[in-house]
Image 1 (cartoon, rainbow, N blue to C red):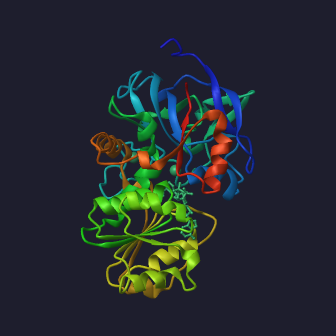
Image 2 (cartoon, rainbow, N blue to C red):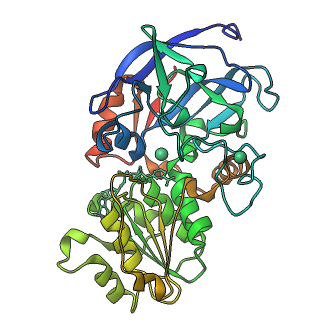
Image 3 (cartoon, protein in one colour):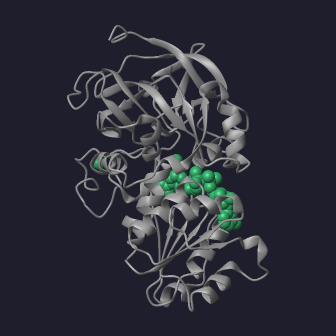
Length: 377
Ligand SMILES: NC(=O)c1ccc[n+]([C@@H]2O[C@H](COP(=O)([O-])OP(=O)(O)OC[C@H]3O[C@@H](n4cnc5c(N)ncnc54)[C@H](O)[C@@H]3O)[C@@H](O)[C@H]2O)c1
Ligand SMILES: [Zn+2]
Ligand SMILES: [Zn+2]
């Protein structure tokens, strides 16, 4: 392409500091360096993790930053050492890398990767890794992605090529939310046919967990949310029972235990609050109940009575639904293309990059599941 090897000036949404709206800026995106790919971003959306970084977590580090990590695009150019991608390929950025080389990548039990930044270096990018500048200031890329930009740069270990016919304004959802919830049910909880499940929180993560429970053959799926508007979509995806914790005096775990004669076989927490994580665990049946934490927070410790686990329950967490990005995302895309995964149900609004703050406000107020943000024209 004519832009290959050159700095691209384009539009991006920048968070200059915590607790402030994004600013649409003209930024410079450097050409891809060794092992890197520069892509034109076609579609993206907001995940609660973006909102958390900007407004809820109050991190001191990590600014100024190009926000966004859930999206899809088309390869514009590649740097030296890249053979797996070529201009024109449809791609999905991975916030969790898969280098295929480290002890984690080689172990089928996990989707962690030693070269991944997110576990211990969330807000660190060394000066040699900076690819964005704005008014001569270096900009970080949120989750090493920075998808709210017409162009962005990814390392080859954190990008996956998907089918040429993939619908980018839908499959971008596999970049975070839908993979996370769906995988939490099928990979982490390992929901079994005929089982009884509960999903706490019905955003994109929770709704895809409902879908995962349904696909795994659950006979009963209890959808729990304080926002009852979410129940309709949960029903479309397979939920059979609906519970609004605000309408109950007693702890929600007691309500679920009564409804299920002892507790659910599997629960998935998709809210990101430690008290809800505890409720999700306590809603599980003793003996074999499994509770998976998909929601994210690092502000508080959680607690539970040891007897909950001593009595045979299992408590675990998930990152990216346990999927190994390079291996599994192309398969999820094929499942969508074959009609086995409904993505339309998650898309509530169509917006463009200039409307990003409006979209974030809507997300914070619970007024949308996922708006599709058209990033490049
Ligand atoms: N583990 C991972 O890899 C991963 C990946 C993506 C997102 N996340 C996290 O998953 C969580 C959900 O993300 P999302 O984008 O779906 O968010 P969202 O805001 O769209 O959905 C959250 C839902 O939880 C509901 N809720 C709030 N309080 C509740 C309560 N007390 N009980 C029941 N429901 C309640 C809200 O009404 C909302 O419907 C966030 O914490 C996000 O950071 C984790
Ligand atoms: Zn996310
Ligand atoms: Zn690895």
